[in-house]
Amino acid sequence: MQENRSSKELILKKIRKALLEKRDNPYPNLEDTPLYPKSDEFLEIMFAEELTAVSGNFIYCENGMDFIENMLQLAEKFNWRKIYCWEPELQNLLSEYEFPFYQTDKDFELAEVGITLCEALIARNGSVMVSNENAAGRRLSIFPHHHIVIARTGQLVLDLKDAFKLIKNKYADQLPSMISTITGPSRTADIEKTLVLGAHGPKELFVILIDDFS
Image (cartoon, rainbow, N blue to C red; front, top):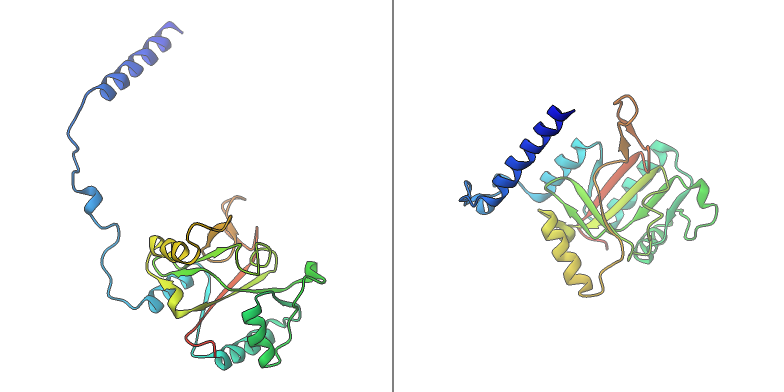
């Protein structure tokens, strides 16, 4: 026991000594070194590749009609019936083309799909930035098994810092109480290191980038 205590005290003394000694920074230019290599790739392509790499689905639409056509194809493919959308802007678009959806949270426990807006798309890692300031709130992006994110091309940015800049410009000092990023479907590998999608949220994530909402 005495030997163990002596060894511990010796290690602690070495640590204290190292902390007290002033040394020059061995990497003086580290903060100026870019974390990622420079890329000339289009943000749309970079985002699509990164999102696909984390099991997400990317769809590009030129306009509102193109969006509705893709929605009809998805609904038919997955046999969706309980589609929820609480964003007034998206509700108007869906209603214009007579696409069926739920405008309230009636029978929400049966929801199959949640359609939401977002704050930004981050191309570097294929992430979606969301907040609780949109009409969809917190629930619609978490509870249904399928989450569909609608974004404009102007919301596509390179890095996380650029996404926060969009947030800051939009809300100024009235920042949302919840700001989060979504990177692919919900996942966990806690049980026997087996990757399971949809463990704590949607098992499918679709990001639809629309060039023109009209």
